[in-house]
Image (cartoon, rainbow, N blue to C red; front, side, top):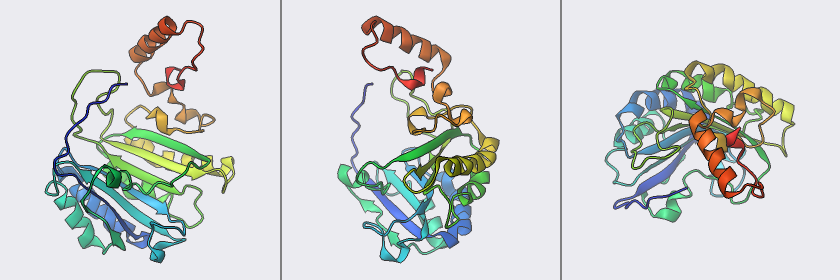
Length: 256
């Protein structure tokens, strides 16, 4: 893998949280404005079962919330239509949007500080995703839902700076869900994923972001064999055979 270092002259980012009862209004605001944000803006909207821990506000502890993570390396202007629309739809319980640095950027997803046993599910979705967003996120919004985090990431317009195996998003959006194995049995989790699949399949872009399908190999539609095009898998396997003919290094499951 090769990474380019890109200057972020005016990095703005933040996490906004609302009560889940505002989900329909928030999705309506998100759907009507997500296509107007600048190409440098990253955002994701999620349903989140909030643990009784910092950095979450006490008002949401033990409840279901709606979470918007958003960032722009070029300043606040391009994200303003989306932020204004969602703040107007419902007053956020917390709102950390503002100038930040790389460390602050790493915190906007509100991920747990340590690894947890969980199953992940993911799929690339097409431009029709805003039409199904409320129905999709609602599958994880019940108090007893086994999926503790379900998000829709908006990646349309991401710039392409070099050639390579995966440099262009295969879809405009990504569906991503996480369920904890220490709280729910696998059968119940996979039933939750199946309910979500019955919704997102309408907007299926045809491939899986394989690195996010953690531990879900028993779900047939979640197998990561389609995470890379066939020609890329073939070329990658040939390179692996050439540099590691004895297979001392474990091969990526994405090679099929």
